[in-house]
Image (cartoon, rainbow over all chains, first blue to last red; front, side):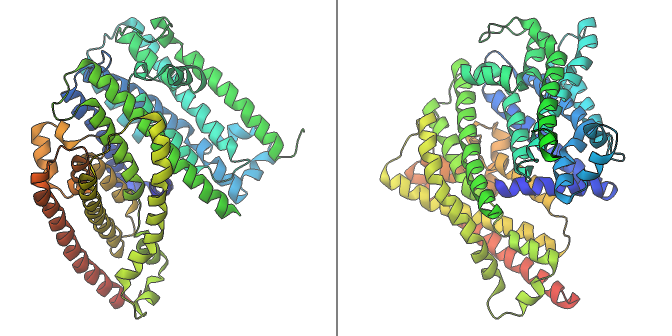
Length: 264
Length: 250
């Protein structure tokens, strides 16, 4: 699968650079990527209707919630993923000498915000919300946007950590792709199916479970069979997102200081 | 030195991603089989075996082995290759073979580590033999599809997106992770008509015994048919593409 990883990043660059001409290809690409994931879920759940008490409708909501948070991240923070390239081609040093915070500059690079993925994410989430019959009450309307933002922040935290690794190992494309793949694959299913070690990992170390599983469990009223945590923990996602970014930022500063020769 | 580091990293990530997915699929099937009626011909241990062997096969099958063709078209060096006396398609075949053999070698450590995570069934020796033949034929089907995709580069260099799209469709309809026999019947019928089923589903279903010995000749025949059809198409496409290069002057 390694050649696939390389190709994915070539496409990423291609589509952002030649956006207009390649829009259809990008759309086809994204539709097939998510479509085949959802199709696989549908096929399996048609034959095996219940996965730890979750039905296909439930899993559609689970996937939609992850997809929206991921899309929001890609729309706002994808430039953080470009940092390793800038480090490699020397562009990054320009940011260091300017008075503004380096990371802020990297995020605020103009011309990179394409809303298409976000629009697709919103449409999918809306469809999944309707399809899953989840109760859209005041709590839902207030908290879901916060949870989606929190999820995007969790994604940002990992994006930042991987980009920081570039200070030591310049080539991080494959690592990034692996993390995204694993994120997508492990959040596709309810976390309760995993063994305890993995559940703990996905909750406290690599908090992907907060991107969609815990919030979805809460709003779908799923019993936490495998967890000692109360259901309302799903509402904590925004806080987890902030904590994750803060931790990632600390790591970023460590890498930055080392890179620019400041400090020990 | 950097190349060595990348090499080691590639090995590590290839094996690691197989093992992580072996674990993931084991937990998925465990959860699914716990609360739903199992298919009569595919008990839990069989489907876990199926998915694990599929992932190991993927180490070899998911490679872009004729990538050199696209790269050479991209930088124009293919023009000089056409002037060489050796048959150019064979040249590309040989170029990718090293990578394939390397990944095939990765199957061994991956398998050993996988056995720490799951238990897989081992068929009898004759069945294993037929499986290996079927795997090889499936590999050839995949090779020609990969070759055809890279040939599109003769006309447009924008093939990467299409390659990825085809890979995902192939994985789904090839029965790489989800056995085709689990599919709803109408989708099964479509899937079995496509060449992708020959890549994964046929060898895997032989391995787990869903395809019984009396059907071996039939299914191997279908695979061979696809290999032939795709090889013929590939030679036509190659000739058309080569003509284009020669006429345009590289």
